[in-house]
Structure formats: structure tokens, C-alpha cells
Image (cartoon, rainbow, N blue to C red; front, side):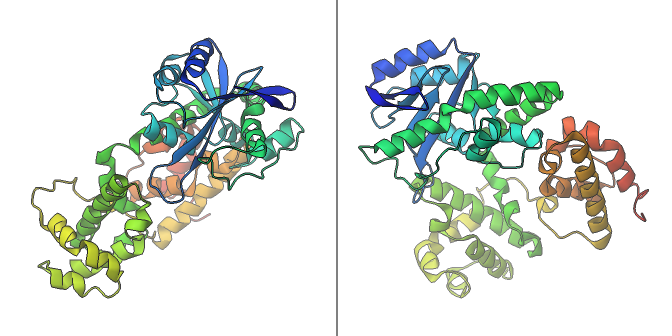
Length: 392
């Protein structure tokens, strides 16, 4: 169905039948780049509910109605098997949606927000700000709270949704050229690949076994308490996904942590012990105590051994000084490269680096610091770890 409206001179086409959608997917296989965005609702579910899929090529904007599309094979094939680059702004949520909705991710992405950070235009810069700065057009942001699963969509919603992809290919061209001129394309695309990897790994069940490490105060627990927390987190992840409810609707983080601490002080678990946990939501305990007792006492539950090195234990004074030195290096190097310092080395990455050194006594380049960042940071970081700069 063609609409009679357009966005900044570009026609908008509303696609609500599979025949047209499949035909477009075949046509798009020959494109060098496509702009893509999604609108979704995630207020009361674990998994995002897709409400609209927006795609733009060089001449048209297309609004795909996913509520009317049943066969996604042609689109999945386009994502995974074409040589097309999919241009997205702040792609993490869109990738997660594609992964959970279709089980397929684009073979190649170009994240315009990430590119802007590499070029020193700001970390986590909005699409509207980037369009205004690089193209000189003000983009409205007045439909952010829309329910995209309700029909019919208003003309205002359609304009908004189309505008979200209208300028992405122009941004792609500008940003790609600047990254190329600065010799950063290889670094940038490795980061785009990392975002795809994160989307894939978040849906691998084995990885849920390490979610206990996301709790800031888990380091305060004894080993038995950490094991309990691990099992509780793993159970909640499975429960939230099975019921398609937000994790906090099953049980809040603080309740899990408090329960793990209480249970860890006893050598024997029992329903009476659960009932005595006054610091934990009583409704949660009333509903799930029996089930959780079974989970915690099931000898067949074979999770990976806990690793206390993953826990967010505060650094001692010596390593806090090393952290400050590392952050100073990151800021100076990023300034010289004219990129956002968060791209070169976020605090979380630096803490992981320092904790690995604290545990082994050796400088280890692993995780996200192991790639292109290592060549920039290695000499200074090695000096910091060997205390050469400790007294500066």
C-alpha cells in the first residue's frame, strides 16, 4: 500500500502484505547499504514486541507492518546472506530484537552512533543531534512513547518512523568517509562485530550461568552464598524468559542478593529458612520457596564453577591509583586521536584488566582490550602495572 505522504521529499511506502515484502527483499539483495530501524514495545514483557520495521534505500522509505507478515524467510536471507551493509543508529536493541524475533542478525552492520564516538562527535549521541550537526536538519522526537502494536498507526507515527531511517544512508556516507580518512575503519568495524557478538551471546543459555557477576555486592557473599546466587540468577533468567516477563517482575535483584546471604549462613536449607527471610519479598517467597528449595538442593544442577575474580570487588588503594593512571592514559590517547574516551577504554574494561593483573600478577590482554586498543595502550599500561608511574 503506497502512502500519499513523504518525508523531506522521499516517498513512504507502507507494506502490509508478504508478496510485496518478499519482492522487496529480493530487490534489496543487490543494495550496497540499507538503513534499518525497529519500533517495539517492552513495557511488561521480557522479549520486545516488534511493532514496525523501517527500511530505507537511496530513493524510498518502507514501513513494514510485522503484524501482517507471517513469512520472514526472505528477510532473514537478506540479513544473513547479502553483501549489504545494514546502517543502524545505536544498534544494540535492534540487534537483540532481530536475534530474539527471527534468530538472525545482519552479516554486516554500520552503527552511526558508534561511528560518531570514534570521530569525537560525542559518546551515545542521539540520531536527532547527529542529523542536526552533520546534515543541518532538525528531526522531531515526539512519538517515543507510542504503542507501536496498536492499529491503525497515525500519520504522525508514520512520519516519525520513516524519519528515523530517512537520513541514515546520508550519515553512513559522511561518517564512513571520515573514518576512512582517519584510518579508523578497521577499528570501527571490529566494534560493530563485537555488538553482533554480544547480541548472539545473550541468547546462549550457558552464558546465563555467569549473571551472578552482575550483582555489585555479590563479592560480600561467602563461596556458598555466591553459588546460591548463581543458581537463583540462572533460575530467574529461565523463569522470566519462559513467562515472557521482565526479570524484576519475577524477583528484584536486591531480593535475590538478600536471599542468597540469608541462606548461605545455614548448613542446611529448608522451607522454614526461606520463610524466615524477612528482608525478602514475602509474596515472592510464598509463591516460589518450594520450587527454589528444589533448585538449590538438586544435585543434578550442573552449572559452571563460580569464579570470584568476576565479582565487582572494590579495588584496594594501590589499584585505585593504577586505575586513575590508566584512565589518564585513555583520556590523553583519546584526545590525541580525537575520539570519545569511552570508546578507547570504559571503566568496566579497565577494571577487568586490573583485576586480571591483581589475580595473576601478569599483564593480560583479553576481552575487548585485546584487539585494536592494545596497540594504543600497551606500553603505558605495562609501565603502570610495573609501578614505573606509581609515584608520579
